[in-house]
Amino acid sequence: MRFFLLGAELEQETSATPKRVWLITDGKPGHLNQLRGLGQRLQHYASVELIEVPVQGSGWWCWLKGSNPCDAAAAPDLVIAAGSRTQPWLLAARRHFNCPAVLLMRPFLPYGWFDAVIVPAHDQPPARPNVLVTQGVVNAVQPGESPAGAEQQLLLVGGESRHYGWDSAALAAQIQALVMEASGAEFVLSDSRRTPADFIPRLQACNLPRLKILSHQQTPAGWLPRAMADAHGIWVTPDSVSMVYEAITSGRPTGIFNLPESGCGRIVAGIEQLAQAGWLTRFDQRDQPPARPAGQLWEADRAARWLLTRLPFHFNIRNPLQE
Image (cartoon, rainbow, N blue to C red; front, side, top):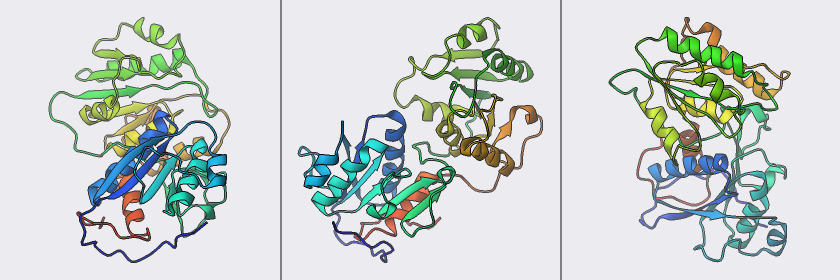
């Protein structure tokens, strides 16, 4: 198995032929969101063709044999994967095509088996030349300016998790307080597949004006980035760390509702760090907006620039890589 050396000096390629990049996906929306977010930023900076390659089942035998994971797709110059089950498929493609492999998560296999690994800080990755540590997972949300027009607040509700408990009555009361305090704003709320069944009926019973409730089953693909772009502010429950980071990435002021914590694990600690750094406003401190850090948190963009300066072959760069 060939291991590619990272850190090669980037030179602009004279050929306009785009590099072909496989996005190996297990079909889970969160993982696909990460892949597309990184892929879109690679396309922004370089001439890149993206091919989504779905995989199912175990890829161990394919890896051991060095087989092609997807005969139907043209040979890649680079393969990227997200999700635990995609790791053997990623290594199979790396071995078969002799191309670099990038993983978007903390691997259960040795870090040295991958050419680049992009890992959120809350997973506590080791300091290695082939590891990029990000604040949260990369995502497909792009930051932008707040829209003109009437104020609209976006409320995103998850559910009980390993890191946070749930209290439908307490959360409904928090939302009621937000709506009643902001008399001139419109509110749009969306739940998730993890939201307890009693929550929406309890919230509807409050008869709140200016609150529109959309079930996650009603929202089409791509709805969330558009809803974030239309919002002036976003409130989220802290149980979904990916949802929290998507909201922050949008550039909108972001607040988090109170949920009972289940211990003090790495996710809970990470949310606390974001609040202390000023990226998040806690519900109890909503009348004291924090000093938001300068600049944007756009980890998909930073990851794309990092990869383009470290991969062992030359891209046709079309936009400057400077921050």
